[in-house]
Length: 344
Image (cartoon, rainbow, N blue to C red; front, side):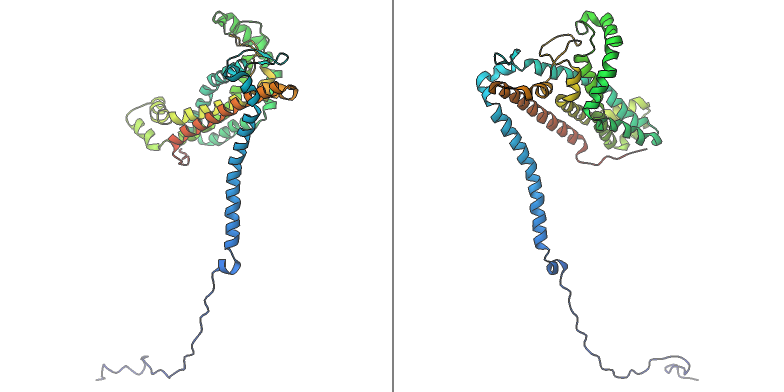
């Protein structure tokens, strides 16, 4: 019997290894790429350039405020706070009061919000909660496309389409039915505060609708599913589970649209009538702070006249900054920096 300790001749086994001379292989370490190419210098240049870009924005803001404050100093010393309470605007006698322009700006902006908010929120709710998936993208695109149209195009459309409709049909109807309120009285010329409010509403609908849609998409899906599981209808789910959780962000979008309405110039100038007066009727012409700057800044001859216009620009600038900051704060309080999440 063969010994099991010895392998069979036909089976491979361990064979002796002949001595070989092993040569040492030298390993060359590759230096880091940044040290070879000197990447520290480009990195410092890039960091400095980006820091300069960020500081440039703040520098421009500071320069704007400085120029407005220095340019309005003469008017401030001449009129003080009475400038914002006076209603006389007479460049010949150098008597200036900004109250008609403040009134026209506030009335036209608030009127535009009354018209635009229901439409914008309705469009946002439809596109996020009820619109078919196939139509959601195209509908959102066409709504946001309204924000890309230049304001002068809105003004031309308002002059040739909106004003004839108002003077021929809308204003006579409002005068017959609601003329007793005093808000819809006077000759129906078409041009006036009502036309300015309508064109502003059309211009701010895309802003409010876009922000509202983003806020609604951030609302967690389990909020909707939980409300529906309790037996709520579609309307109750939207009202309780969606709109209630997104109300702060919706208000932020509305205030952001208000900031756009406050600063709009060209379209409003073409249809508001440009008369510095305070009237109760929405049919009467008016004036806004942005419109008076666009119309009279190039014609200002006296130093006090020019300083009064600059002070109006300073007031409009500060109001716009405050309104936009408040809107961003309200939107952030809902989103908390989270990206929007779509749902089917």
